[in-house]
Image (cartoon, rainbow, N blue to C red; front, side, top):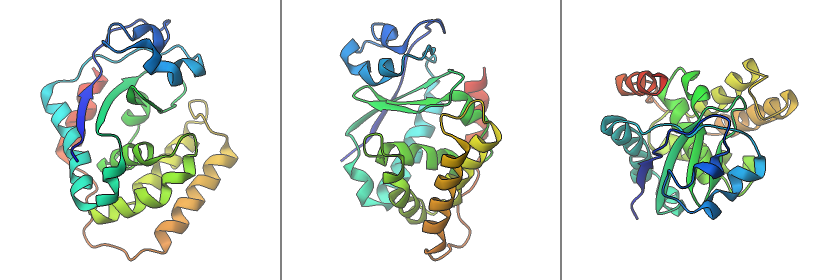
Length: 205
């Protein structure tokens, strides 16, 4: 099974809901029900260049090859970014929409991989459902799984942007750290790459 990444094409005003951007993304509005249920004004991010698109696709493909269980994710994944003040990640029939500013606050590539895997493997609104799979997949593809724990650290430091309470974030981080503690550490894990820094520079424009 092959995962295909398509970056959302858009240029909507921040005062409009994602569901109102559906026509510009050439997607049926019914695909955006999960977005509109939050009723949060967000802007659809513009398209990324081909190099950035290949970079994101490569991250997912690397995990896909090393971790067969990841193949249970959707055949097609449309990835877009939003700039809402709340760093909520949305997933639905439309694909996956990630908070741009959260990505800009990440320091390492393994954190971005963790963010992608966590939400692609998550079952419905159950945030904890993908912790085990994310850690296993990152180990299999030689990414440092502590990147998932680091995401919750970033959200703890940016409380006004976090969609979770402090107590929930501490619980999440503790649960992930417990999963990691039961695994055998890997030598020389992937943590950073120049492509990640170039990707951040591109979406910052």
